[in-house]
Image 1 (cartoon, rainbow, N blue to C red):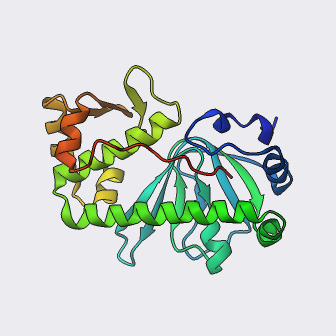
Image 2 (image 1 turned 30 degrees about the vertical axis):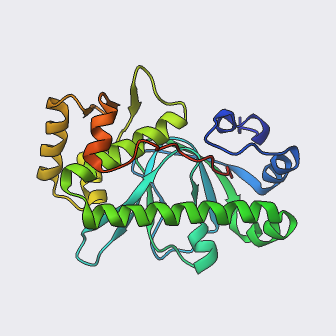
Length: 243
């Protein structure tokens, strides 16, 4: 049975801004269904004009761009609560691709109703603008990481950001969170070779700072990892709107 918006399991997490009863009813009308996909399924393709928008309800994925020579740049990772496809709604086509890494369950929205939805519920349009601004801030931080951080600093920064986000989603168990990606995915996100990425991860494991193995990430010495990655101790994930 489809998950009703008023029973959405994501709403219980402090990561998301509480929704009013009117906002819940509005999202219930905007939602047209759900889609379950297998790992490796393309959700949105670069250059496409998808008629649908999605919110990731369960599972994880990747956003990436592919160059003409086949090389890939991972833009970021998709986690539960992420809104997908807005780029096509604003720019007429997707400028990057989105693919499921694990089995995923997606809430589906009709993109043709987006502007009507915004006219009827301008507060939701503001929320989406705020979310885009946060995404822009994250991409700026990513650019700094790619341009100025060393390989060890990049991996440490990524581990902290991923751990904090998944912890805020309530996915932490016994000091570890699921991270079901390949080392190549992380290497592509950080602009590193697979060999270099593997060496850094091994070094962090031997120094008992962080450990990523068998799809599970644990941070065993957060203070040292913060120092290593040149990030401050205040890494609180700000509450974000949920669509």
